[in-house]
Length: 293
Image: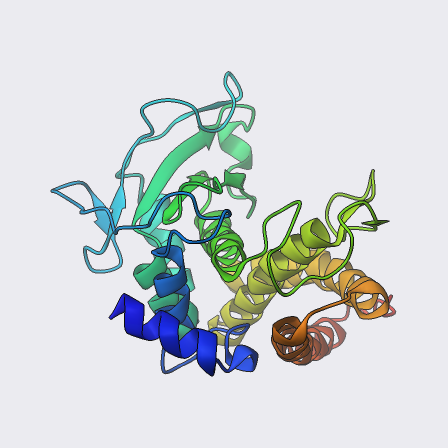
């Protein structure tokens, strides 16, 4: 199945359907196949889904929750958390409000490694934030802090998006397809604003946080007016929409692509424009009234 999927992808892929999570799983199937391929220097190891093997799990027993044996988020600020922390299940429930992303997460991620941020006092853990990370050579594994359920949900789709781009051929500092900009050329990232970065890193930031912004919007649409979840989703949209508008403009001005990238990034920008317009509508309705960047 992997060989057949790769053969079709290389001969007649619809790159415009690989950017936004698809209801029929078209993108998920090919991304999984690419992650299992070892012919690319960006994928030195072949992904084989890690079994749950009795570990605590999420997404109907498909995604294991395990502590990392070594490495991971830096100590002493971050410490391993319980694999049965209830905020993990709370995060799963929020991701499920976006069915396409939930199905994709369960298919492409096999292991969640939970951490806690020891710098956050117990009184502040209602804040909907998180820290997260994933490694280039560890497709299917994500690390995240589970101090807040909404933060967990955002970290899930954020790191999944990084994995997707890597499998598609875009590393943080270089690319084998999609991005044609010289890695020595530096641009303004929507997230790390203190220094300019290669376009590959800018696209990673934009792509991952557009997934986050789309999730924030879905949570808003499915939450009750006056609820804590609705309030948190508005706060997060107010934080993320302006950043993503700035990144959208930066990519529009400076991104250069190959043929695959033209289709992929064209579809990504169209999806982004829809999400950002809807996010602006929410902020206007909620009285934020911030001018677009």
